[in-house]
Length: 322
Length: 244
Image 1 (tube, rainbow over the protein chains, first blue to last red):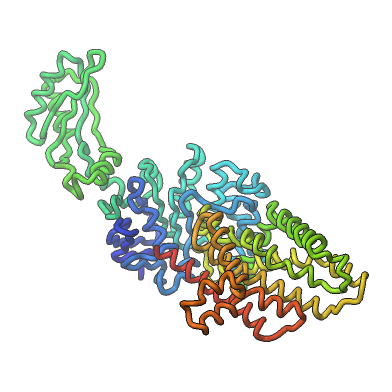
Image 2: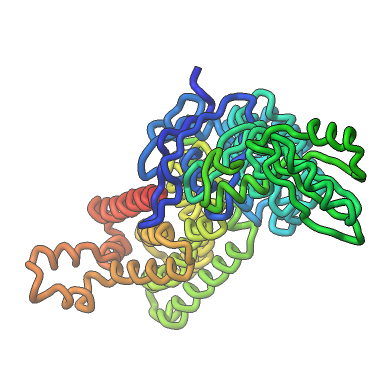
């Protein structure tokens, strides 16, 4: 079976700038793909090409088996799209706007009302249904945009920064919504908020300067962080140097260093060779040698670090845990 | 077809949901009225017809129609709603036609609201109502042609002021193309057939022919093909913008 979304060597140039560079991806039903990248990395441009709003310079994309270039209307039927900034007609009310979208999507009469009621309840829009959209808060505007994208219960949802500008409660709500819809849809969200990836995505793709730098499950990506599996120890300042020297002699330890001292308490970081798990070795040594250690914990490595490594250009792929 | 009407309905709703519709209609009625009564001397020329009413329409349209057309696409592009519209399952031509129809119907409403002057002239005298109906038809078609030009220009930019200025200029050239102002520019270096062709594009010539009560096929064909051409160009422009 064909993937829900497929891009093949998708490329977009604006003059001399290559905004999206040879992106090949496929997204299956049940996946929530987080499209990560710094501002200007090409996330929005890539999404716009999949929706058919922009034409690629070269390469192609298909949605649910329909080629975007050959049958754009079929693609748009299968797709819900939330553009960046969730633009909507400000002088309309959410009710009239959703009515318009429902009609264009082919719903009339009772079916139209049912669809609108369902989506309004989902995104909690009841209280502002009859106010002009331009008078609404940013959170409500965003929800109108979400409602518009979800109205026809599309198999593929593409959302450009769906939680941008929302307050923490609203973010949580939108993420719950995305997770709930994820079961049988292919969803792509773009974001530069990394916690969002942990919160909703089953897969993360990091893109920088138009190219895909990494593609994998968020936890797999996190394992590529420079300090993944390194061990942090705190001990009193006077013992710190002794502990450091002892631990540095363990076979799988690459380096042990004191990274800071506050109020007589020092913090040590022990980095493993090749991201090996050294927590047990360190703990055994601490116990057997009765080292005066106060705390031990293992660092997971953060997506932030991976993101930095991948997007700042000084390394690609797996080189980051050297 | 269905989509065209849904888009037109939404668009038309926007006109009347904002002050735009009321400002436009009031100004249109005030301008046509003032021109007819003061400049045209409607009450004193002793003729029971609406010639002095219709003769100013090209000039009123020149000012007001580009103002209606300028927002059609430029505003959507500016606010980003064009991304919503063009990712709904509609084709470009449906979107172009829907928006255009809404604007044209709106102009039609404004034109229809001048009916008191028609009643007036019927009370005061015994006009040839056939000529008046033909003139209304011609005026409506001319507004449509102005609008089609304006809509296409609006698709070129996201700046409404630029859209207005280009559209007004293009409309002005089309209006004047039968007069020496434009023709002298071509005379001397362009072949005669070309000068004749430019002259034949004049809105004034065709409009004046219709307001004489002569509904000739070529005048209708002129306006309708002009509208079709500019709307086609409009579709092309919207599509080209997708690729750039």
